[in-house]
Length: 499
Image (cartoon, rainbow, N blue to C red; front, side):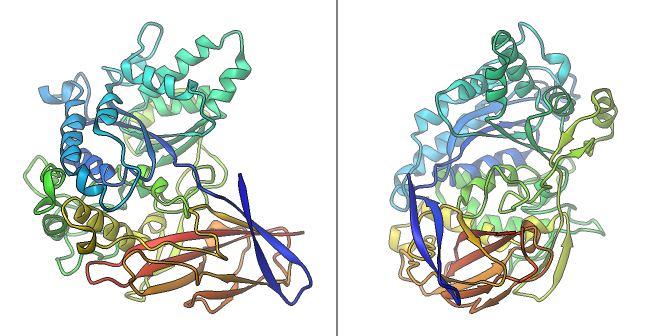
């Protein structure tokens, strides 16, 4: 079902229509993680659980990868650790009654326990083949075969050979109906974090139509990209965990205050990220960004990697042979060329708090960091606080549409479009701040667009006369003013300019 709101167009005698879904469907999400490799996996999954009302978890699969495999030096890393998922879910169960005071949509703990399973027990493509199905590969197979039109967002936070086994099994199942197999592959939206085994290139070479994002950089940008305390070249990105120091130790001091202590059973299970030598590394490592995008359905579209959002921004077209960042895996990948993936794209962004202009492959994530950290902070408060003792997200409404859908507008060169967000609300009656911004890199118009009233509820956008046949992205960033922390809601407006 579609709803439509009239959009008044100043200066022309016509009406345009905004189309938006009444209730944007929640994204189906499956997560493959090398649980037990290091503490960042547990950090990421605890963080995921306080956001899991925003999407639909389909599978939580413990898998192998570069660092957790049958030939690891440490005995603990030679086997899979699904029990770590279960421990975190038990902590979630203990805070769930309080979470339900603050938001709806939380899955039952029993359901989450039921979707935990093991993937391939051994490393890489060598562990894929006839008779090698695993509970994890079967879980992905069932998710794809389910009578559900929604795509499946698959987060690969380690090796991807469990998904490779799923595809091999489905191809065999569909030997007499290759069109059915193509339809199943078309349901996949894969986000591969760091290419941590040799199966990703094999999949993309063998099934070139697959929708596959590979992140070698942005996946680390929630708290990184890198550096341990004591390093001389630590670059942790924008400093949004003040008043604590600009260091991994400073990040962990922030986590101690806002996550790890005084925030219930789930926070108590959120570990420090201490490495082999005992030093602290940047929070959550790589693996948060791949599942975080679907939290904001009004901003992030899983079908369009070049549009950007909390899940990063990637190329509109596939890049050929975008290699793993790991030298040993790159050597293996050369056996499966060519292969194509959506790779990192760069942004240029000026931090409104500092005035610093940043550019590069990490910036598509860094630009949202303040909001992402505030989201974690306030959701952890929900684990223990009453409703009136916590902050909650505002609700952005554009031209009366308060859904969480991305809006689509058709315009002509030279037209003036007016957007009204005055119907936006805040559940805590906090004051609201409006920021209408052109997301230049997400669109195809090669230039800036003038926005009148950008810091107000009502904004006017002037479509350039030279924008014919292009796409312009306008994003409403709505934030509240709350002494705990400001929270954000977003609405993206995609403007298709007629030729």
